[in-house]
Length: 324
Image 1 (cartoon, helix red, strand yellow):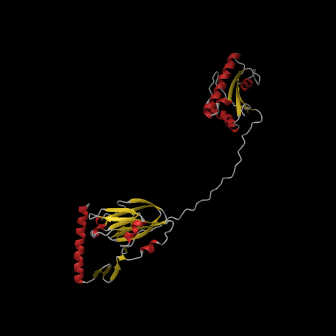
Image 2: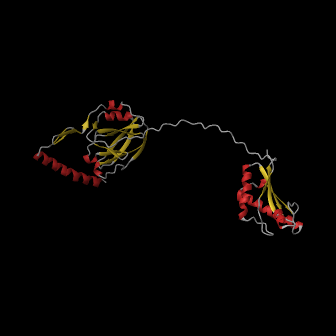
Image 3: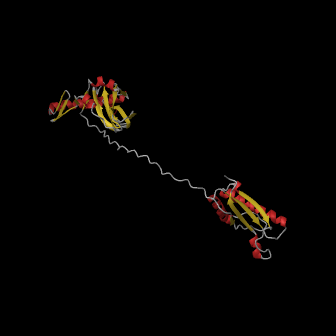
């Protein structure tokens, strides 16, 4: 890093020296005297003596901060000028024994200092993040060594005051720092949600019988998927009335032995109960399955139509009086 800086210093300073000699000799257009610079009739001051106390006493807006950068008096070359940036925007190339001031936005600020001689144009090189509170002035001390290495240190107002007393305000460069601070967000008034009356749990006032219309293959006890829709209707009804319980009844026609029919009807209602639990989430303690076999026909078993009506599964739903 030091070799690169030294090479840059020699490369840049030699042409500048030659240019200065030739210009004075030929045109007389360049005249440097103290802090005053003149080139072909254009005059400017690179330093200004201002009352920094008066400036510091000026109020800082609540959404902004004032940043003051102070560089100690050293005899390093011009190539160690401290390129100061604020949030990736150029502020000034600060010379020895000078200071500069600028306003920025409150909040997180990225500050960077790097020697001019490095010429990498990286305004975020060696950046440091500072969380700064609005309406305040913050002071930073800049140190550069002969190799161009920089140090940026935040200091207190009491420490800054004697340092500023012997410094000049550097004025010959135009800052690119623009504090376009976002507008403050107005606090939304607290809104109290309106009180809502608790919904009463629906009560089933009388017993309801639902025909599930589930048909089984001969001598089978498996609920086929095409009948799930009818079973779902029972589950939805019980969800609507959450304090109900259901008795699932299974019936057969009179063909076959009575004991066989009773066992078959029990297997079938057990299958319906399992579908309600596993497929539709009905709690097991709300369901009772009873197979009646051929003991409760609702039509004659002497006809095909009558026997079809007798082969049925129904659910009897009523309010569960055992619950509080």
